Image (cartoon, rainbow, N blue to C red; front, side, top):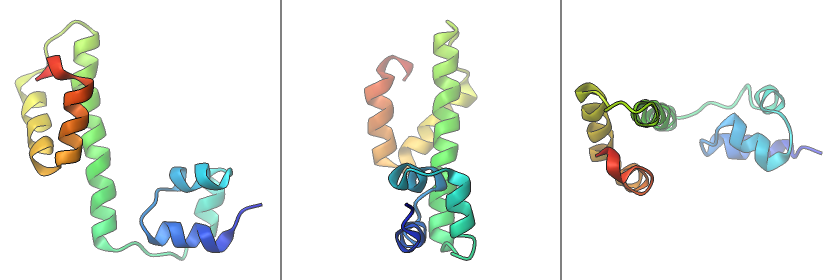
Length: 101
């Protein structure tokens, strides 16, 4: 059974639908139905967008490496820019892809 109060509280903290769904063992759509009235702060929205952008940039560099290509200069510049903004992201990149840099 889904704890609706907990779902709302987690969303108010900025958790994603998928993360809440995993926590509550339900679907992201169910979470979306429960929290449709919960508003995120601009900071929470920005943080979520930043994480998505980081994943896209890192995935593009990894894809190039797995296909045997060198990442483009633009891809590496974007990756380095994201790493400068977020030390946690930088350490994860260094752990997973030390030969990419």
